[in-house]
Length: 319
Image (tube, rainbow, N blue to C red; front, top):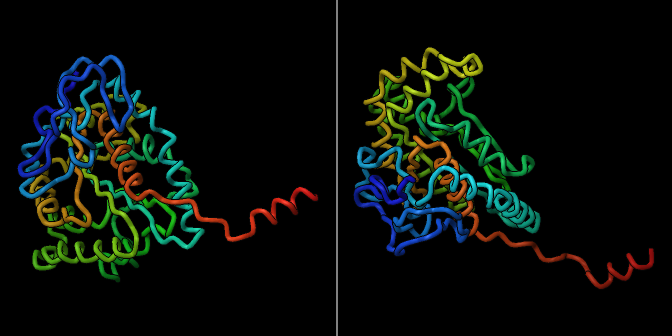
């Protein structure tokens, strides 16, 4: 079984797991998952295990590791299913809070290389949410209209309204990733964008949006295997894009660009969480719990009645 405290359980300078002694059962978010034999200590939360702290290095994080969880695939699937209804329950409370005048929302940002599992996160984690309460945006290459505006214009327009959970499949970070790797704008332009993004996110957070930024960290070997599968299986052809191989040839440059993003934009207000993604089941479990831990911290409240409960009860009884 995978060791939850294996290589990459913490990055340089990042927070690592706390000692918990030997465990006969895997525990995630207070839920016991049976048949776990590993004795690796588990951290207090996925938030602690995966946060990119000062000095964090991508090269030190094993993409096959499972920080925050000491079970295997079957255990992870049980744990994922065990909390499947909680996100929608929190979502309902968050939406109800906004109807009482609340201004809070949550924004999940998901970044990663091609084949890193963004689609699986959308199906298996975001899919647990009530679609009516989700504001989902998949950012592609900017349109002609979007190019006429500052790069954050389209991001601002897609922010979640109060009571919503917003989901960005790719995001403002494309403008310091693909733009940097392919030199789509001068260095003097993209190099200023880190500070602009930080300032933007600070304003978004101050307005009541909790930001959860996730990077899905896949290895080069795993990406190659997933691309090969798309070429071998007719039911996967539709997923294959010849441009994915072109992008793969830029792998070292993308790793450098992602490291710069983590170094410059993992702030106290909007930190990055780096999720090892070679094991799809673990990535889904980790993102689910990152969202849940932040919603638990937000603790949205049901709004009080703005009418006379006793009076309305009496009126209803007379009908």
